[in-house]
Image 1: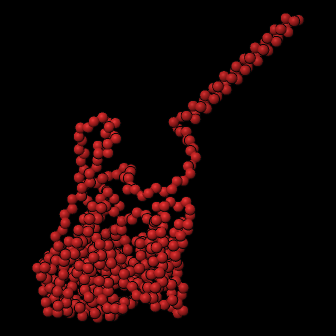
Image 2: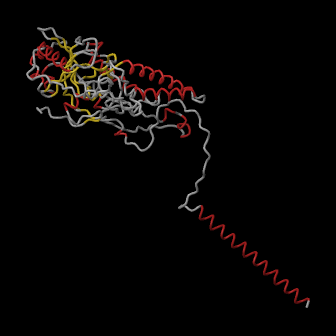
Image 3: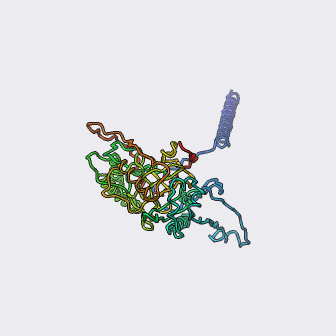
Length: 455
């Protein structure tokens, strides 16, 4: 009996041991399969790394070019010649530590243009010009070429040198060659002076005047609500762009008050606050030209000092066989020539917008009459503009076509005057939402130049 019990106990012990071993083996197999599944290529392991405590923004540095780039397309319209020149060196570890072992040299070859100096030269680009203004030929002299032409291209070259490593700031070939000539002319009989620029035409859509257009004329990426031509406000209607400027000032002041704001950022904010306050004060006191409704042009900074031609002076804009009266309404960058208000641009080419220039070729003639500005400034009087321009045309020998007559396209204010509509809170150009941010290129993308034939 004892032998039977002993055998039974041994049997159950062996059975229990076998069961335990089987369970251990099955568990090991299960864990191994799960482990292989987790490490398979189809399901990569993702490790979550806790976020670090934000650190203050570092000082601005020259941006590093990253990604796959085609060097032949980096610069607008600039021909790129690329070559790799290897030279024998030392050990790789030594060369890696030497910044001069791996160098990219940038050298831009730019041909500086020769200005057109005779009526025949101008006629090669604008064939109708001698016929439209027969007295223009008599105004030329051997000394007609203005020193400002050289100054303009010297400024362009200087900016190229300063921005050669900044792809976002480098002038395209189209914008480098935007001016054909600048001439100082004088009529032999009337002694009337004129400064002639031959260039393309970019678009200026800036300006605002709540007295005439309370709702504003719209806003683009590079929009500024002010122009250099301004006059004291005549009504209590607030400028529609005043609200966004005040909101921007509040944002800057709030960020400046935060104790954790980095010192460099504080400098940027202080500059932005000063600019915003100045803009607010200006918008409260003055009215300005409106690019969409008023005929004016923009002169390069520095032309007034060199040859005359200042804010408010009368201008003739000549394209094809048409003559448009205008005034000098704004001052633009010192390295850019050829810019007119959206009103003129759309009259020349209906497809023109704030982003699309009406004329890409150097076929537009701007004839500025220095010293003709009349003060005090005020809202444009289109009838007076017409009469004064026709008188100036007679002083330089007359024209064979009538001077274009501008119609007032600003609708009359309803009665009572409505409260101006709020404008988007986006910051106009010249008052960026983030002071100190890197400036961006402001090129108008060209569209096909319209035909110069009569419309």
